[in-house]
Length: 292
Ligand code: ZN
Image 1 (cartoon, rainbow, N blue to C red):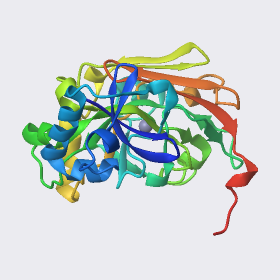
Image 2: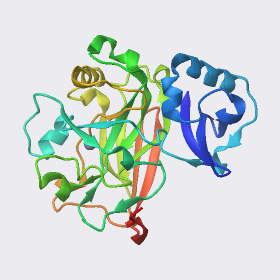
Image 3: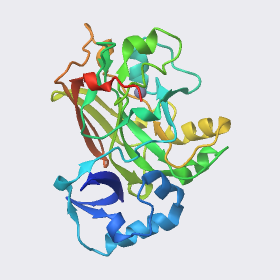
Image 4: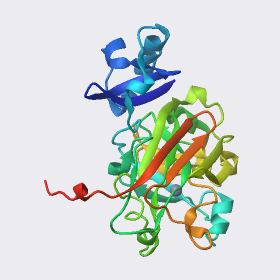
């Protein structure tokens, strides 16, 4: 199933994509939670309820009449991985890491799959990173990699948007990876049963139609299951946690000269079987400043 979060008629809720149609679960299965994290926490029974609503073949909203939101509006955690493709390690001039280089993106960075993201007032060193993201479906700890597939609800596309100067001028990535709007996700949470092998997916990124990244998840240094084993050694993973798995070579920062994103650029990322996300870049609006 392709689970989405969408806004229509002034309310935001979850649904299932069916071609160009949307099964509105609030209408088709009113007993189910209407928010994705609560839906995932409800486990297999909720998934079966959504499947039944999809199979029942009732009325559909037109995809063109809804606004897609981040499939998970406010992930409990976003745990990303640096330097997880050999060609990206090489272009960054770094050593291959011995351990996964985990960093957080703040959950407030989660952003819709087609909405513009911000060129910050604070920096012009704006860059893209096309990535496969896992979504956790079960509360878990100490998961051996052989069983990690059991805790993955599904997969989606992530643009790990990065503010390079803020990322590297101090020893931790947190600030440079967490600006508001800098984690476009989607377009749907594709459930694991539709992604039989997450380690054979093409990942491609275009900027203004120019192909910048083209790789395959078979080149991951630490694969999805190893990452879950590693993360869950330290802390509990929860339904709705998002784990972007790292970006392949071809980011703008390492080009000579660097090609940072500017307002008006359009970044598109496609992954086999997951669809595509496409976001333009806009100057951060004055209206972001607020107190209260
Ligand atoms: Zn990344």
